[in-house]
Image (cartoon, rainbow, N blue to C red; front, side, top):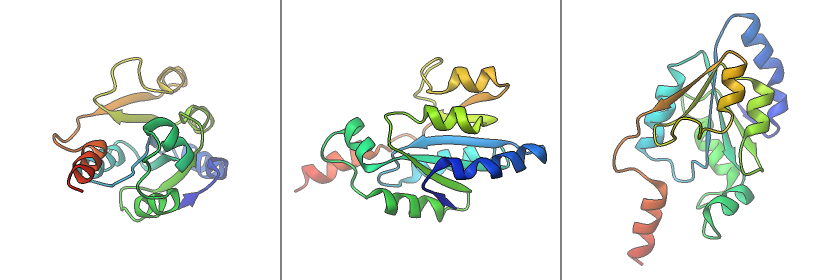
Length: 156
């Protein structure tokens, strides 16, 4: 399910909580979906009962990555992620970080790649303070959207 406003996920979050189920949260640009992304999303989904993926809006991606990004617009990125079996909910955020969503949804598990060190994950302190945990997933070597984009642009 694609939720253009993350607040529409609050009733679902409450249902999961009542049923004793764990909500997992991760975020990113997910500009060009590659095997590294798939591995991270599948591993994240195994950590709970439902996975929310928050993606940066196009404006947020440009702010973080520069004027040449994103490659795919937000609606297409959301649609691709929504089609994955491991992903239950997709939402978007326009800010530089998804902190407001993390605080609002209070996931049981916050997931990022292992390239994010302790204390670097946005929302880590808030999730841990609420009784949740942060998991860092090892990244598949050799996969980077920025690297793929650079390689393609270098061949033109």
